[in-house]
Image 1 (cartoon, rainbow, N blue to C red):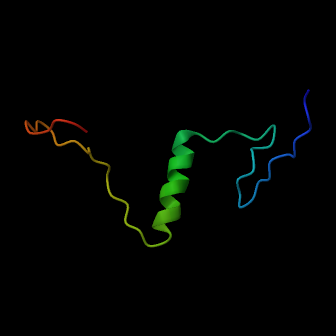
Image 2: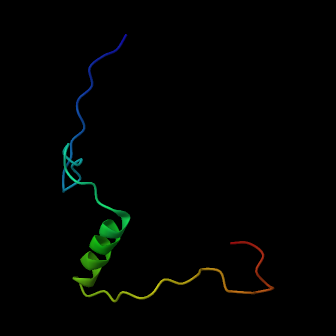
Image 3: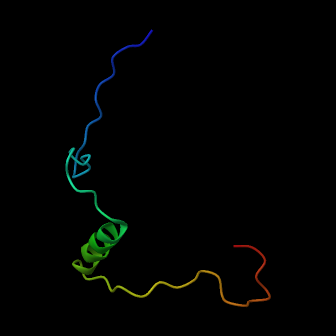
Length: 61
């Protein structure tokens, strides 16, 4: 038997996109993320690998 469940609450801007709204692209989301932190004084640096290139001592990552 199914019982009714309360609807999820959306607070702090976590609302689902309304029907008919244009969907954001990955680049839009990335730009918003970087702009958020840049606007709070963080420095944006180019991405880099966590694994050193051609490191013979590297066993696991």
